[in-house]
Length: 608
Image (cartoon, rainbow, N blue to C red):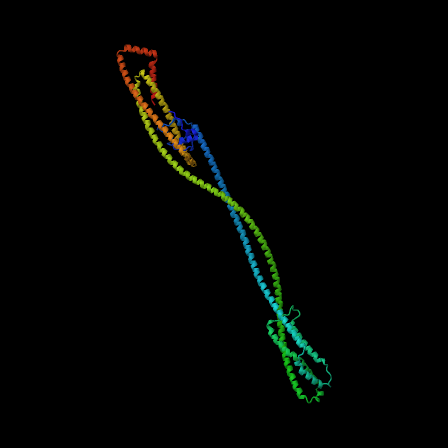
């Protein structure tokens, strides 16, 4: 009856417990509990013990200690708790890293926003400075253009002034040297006047020359005024609009200046002739007609010269007014040029200051760029580290998700296996019920036969009763084993319910089942072999019961034979009674009472 456990069961308590639970449709680490906790665990059918007989398993399996199972359950629970703590710690670290990453991202967004604001301000200032520099450059270009145009006009005016000076000097040189064409008639007239007035009072010869020189000086002064302008002017400048008129005036002045000296001589001669007319009347009677003709000619020339001089005087006055106006314009232009030069110097200073500020701004901008690049490098390194950590966390999470999906699939498969094993268990329970019913029928039959045989047993029945007593002991042992197995079955069913509850909260441990499927299959085959052996033992017991029934029938026949013999002996009770009394009294004086006690004990043992 006793069988040695399998080598897989004897290797370690954990594998043995796992094989025993997997033979019932459970894992090895699904919440194996201690015997104290098993007493309080309700059965899956509502707490009522099963009425069906337990499975007839091998005593080797039943001989496993519950303490080893409890130790295995505690070890599995501690392993699971350590793994749970590790996973919780990893989750907390992942959350902390995620929070740190969020903080860094927020800080990075704030930094970028601040840098954008700073860059927008710097860009606005740079654009404003560029606009100001552009406007200053435009104004500088306009001022330089105006300055170049003013300088060009100044150079043109200076060149025109030089040309006018040269012409005035040329005219002055021409006036100082009298032309020969103008002096030829005057020399002849002077010769006649000198001849006619030789006896008259002498007139200083220097008077005509002085008058001519004074007129020449007056005209030269006017020309100097025309050419040079007022002394207060910084630089004489002619007017370009009256250049042609001035040329015409100079052309008209040349013959008048040339004819000025003979005109004065004629006037003086006329005066001298008027003064000495009485004295010379007598000597100039012959030349009267010639002198009258020459007089009329001189008068006409003087009138023409006076008209020309008046026209020239008017034109000179107009030219002087124009020159004064031009001089005022020139002074205004010179003042405006000085003002523009001062403004230009101021703008140059401002431009230099702006260029210096621009250089300083560029230096600060470069420093800010370098600082920003350093900060960006550091932040990019931090981001790369965070991204690496995040990618690793994402990989771990993906692996955990894949593992969870795989475990869910395995859990579904295990649930299917469990349902199949439960159906098999129900089928086995039905078979146990049938076997129990058959055993009860057999026990009832045996009880009936024992009652029939208990009334008249003889000394020959003692051996049979002793054998029956041994068989009853064996049956009692079997019943005790049956009760133990039934109790173990209830405990296993309670463990099954508790393991089912643990399965819902510890799905992650299902992955160990895959590694133990082969071992469980082997142990399941061993359990099936042991079950077959137990079935064979039940068959042997059935055969032994059949043999005992046959023996009881034989004993019944012998009993009937003995009863018939007793009846025959009662007819002749003498010798047989003496022999019987002597035999019973010699062997056991308390024989009948002991036989009755033995029969009562046998009946009590036979009744289940």
